[in-house]
Length: 360
Image 1 (cartoon, rainbow, N blue to C red):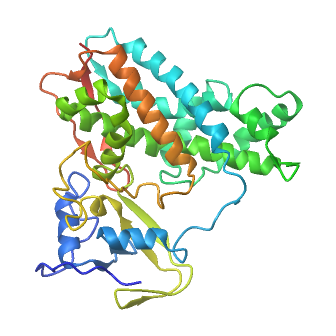
Image 2: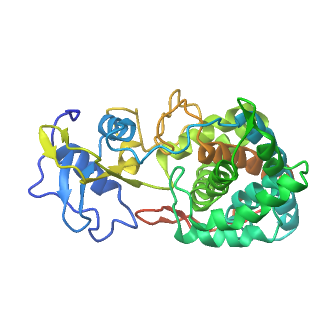
Image 3: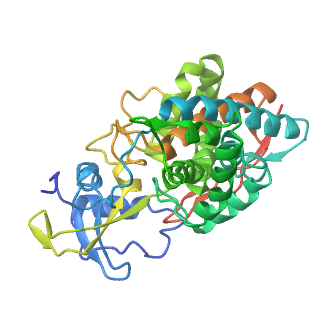
């Protein structure tokens, strides 16, 4: 595996990822790394940093650095997607209409922080009060990809047993009815799939949704285009993930010795994939700091390799589309509150923590 090689800049010493100011604005740091230190050891972080799009993509897609594969059974997307969409539409409209008559709203506290978990819980047919527990677990658990929170198995097992005995019309019951070569999925397989969906409704999706809303509110003309032409929403969502990923730093551990750019890394080495830097690499994207819902190929790396069914990506995309449509329907004059500007923050998990808006 070789590193890409656009022209190098001139910096005396490599900047560290934990340098002061990085949580507030990491983009100057990313630029310095891309230009002068495309592969560098960060001793404070205990990882090798890679920052260029081509290199990050190669490492994320390399089986030698990927987390161990999970059960390769059926992906069940034909069951998952309709159930999620129905639940996300319903929950999004309830949340949006509940706050639409207020003079001023914080869309993080009242909407984006709750919608992903509530939609995943509702789709699976779990009690609504579990949304708070799922949301809280995801605040401290995995925030990227399909890394499933360990608490979810304990939450789900009793519900799987009950659905075996008394199936309903929810997604969890449907998963219990899935057959592979005439055999039902095991309780462990059903639990794993349901847990992956709950993880997809967790913190990373909530952060990404907050950034998505901020990007569109920062560009009112593009927001109005999304209102008039809902078919643009998936592209607008992908562009937001490229520009402002919820997990700007994704670690990978080498399972065997690997070579990057002529540097041999032993097995066990941690490689920090700087997705936040890769998404703004000018050698991959024209005018990379600009948010543009018409960008032809956003090609974000938030959920890893394209083409494979990834529950987290499915939950996030459906929640984003349904959430935006519900807000635009309930709040025809949606705009920033006077004088407010969003302030994204965070290094490992990044998004605005406050979105003050006026609904009309």
